[in-house]
Picture 1: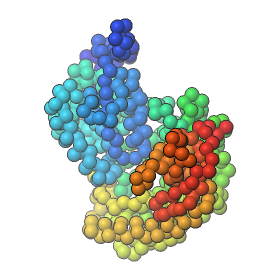
Picture 2: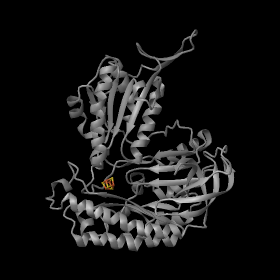
Picture 3: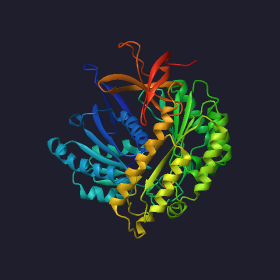
Picture 4: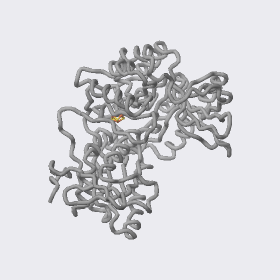
Length: 483
Ligand code: SF4
C-alpha cells in the first residue's frame, strides 16, 4: 500500500517523466505505477469558486499526464465538481452521475470521482449508493487530487476524503493553464456568517485568508510570467479578507494597484456587513479596481433580513450604496435577491420591489428560495407555496428589466474600453464581445471579417442597448497590451 490512507501518497513517491525514444510518447512514473497519456472529462456546477477549483484540479492532473477533453467518450477519468446551493444544479448532477454508469459499462477502466460541496457533506453516502463511483473528495482537499487518482490506479477505490485542512495558514499558489490574460485568485476560503438559508459554511468551513504578501507575490508572478492583465479576487466573503492577520481587502487592493502590467482588479463575493469605509475609499482612489461592485442584498425587507440572519438593515445597505456612489460616481452596482424566503409576506416582497427602485441596480441575479438541508432555515416551518414563489420571482424580474432598460438606454453614445474575450452569435451574425471595466458586456462587429480580436483591448461606442445587452461599434484596436 503506497498511500497514507488519507489519499496522500507517501513523500518518497515523486513523478518521473519518461519519454519513449522510439515513439516520443511521454509517460509519468510514480512509484511502480506508470501513467500513460490519459484524458480527463470534468463537469463543474455552481459558483466561480467551483470553476476556479476545477481549473486548479486540471492543472494538478497535468502532472499525472492527464489532458482535458470535452468529449466524454474519450475520457479515462470523469470528475464532477458539485454545488449544494441550488436545486437545479444538484438535480442535474445526480442525473448525470447516474448516466455515467453506462459509460463505465462500456469502458471498464473508466475512473469516476465526485468533488465539491455535495461531496463534502454527502461523499460517503454517494460512494456507497453509486456502485460506479470510485471516490469522493471535499472542498478542502482538492490540492491532493493526484494522490487520490494515484490511489485509485494503485487498486484502492470506494473511498471518501472530506477532511478539513488544519494547517496554520491558508497558503496556495494560483494555478492556471488556460493561457488567457484573465485569472481568478483565491484570497480567502470559508465563511463565518451562517446566513440562515446557506449551506456554504458547512461545505467550505471557517474563514481563512492568505497573507497579503503571498497574494501580491502570486499576482505579480501571474502578470510577469503568464501575461495576466485582469484578476478577480475570489472568496465566499472577500470583505472579511485578512481579519485574522490584521490585514484587509482595502490594503490588498492598494498594494495590487502598484503592479505594473496589471490592468484590472475585480473581486467577488461581498457581504454588506463587512464593507468598510476604508474599502469604499479605495473604490474612489484605486486606478485599477473595477468600477463595478456586486453587493448581494437578498431582500429589501428588514424583517426578512432578520430571518435570514444577514446582520444588516435596509437603511445600512442603502447607506453603503450612497457612500460608494459618492466615492466613485461611475460605480455600477448589481446584486443577488432571494424571492419568497420562508413565510415572506406580500408586504415584505413589495419592500424588495421598493428597494429595486431606490437602488437602481444595473443587473440582478434572482432566485426563488429553495430549502437546503442542514441550514437553520430548514428548521423553520414554512407556509409559502412554490406557486407564490414562482409568481413573485417572475414579477420581480419583469420589474427589474423595466429599470434596467432605462439605465442601459443612457449608455447609448458612451465610449468604453473592453478586453475582447470571445465571440457571440447575434441573430446569425458573428460579433466580438468584451466586458467593460464596469462589467457590462458589449457586442460589436469587427472592421473586417478576418480580423482576430481575441484578447485585444479595444475602444467601442455603444450604439444601441436593451435591458440585457449592449451593441457597440469598434473605434480603435489597441493591441494585446496597453503599455
Ligand atoms: S455570507 Fe451568508 S450567503 Fe454568503 S457564503 Fe456566507 S453564509 Fe452563505
